Length: 158
Image (tube, rainbow, N blue to C red; front, side, top):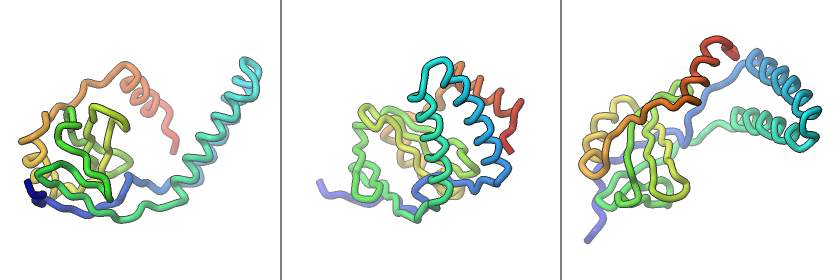
């Protein structure tokens, strides 16, 4: 069976938001406080993990995402040179992340989830094509999701 292109779009390769200096100063103060607490409880290793996460956040903000092509075919979803077959997908839904509209696809194997940036105008076409082959299901928020949302509302970082 030949591979046929069903839909194609171009978007950034990851959600992106430019953070302000106020955000980073808040993150550094929180990381310092958490580091002090963790140092006295456990030692140096958890402190290094905290600062590795801070560095990762800073680096991901410093490097802007690039445009990439996404293709839906009769075989599956192509991102760059990797094809994720329809059989590997469990379910999908649409979400907002860092000010971008994203398609989230849960997979049956590692990497367990694909998060692809889409354009709002393409959402209906993508939903129709993927929905014929994969279940559309928005997962219920877990306790940790609710806690993070509540914390974000009570203590904004910006």
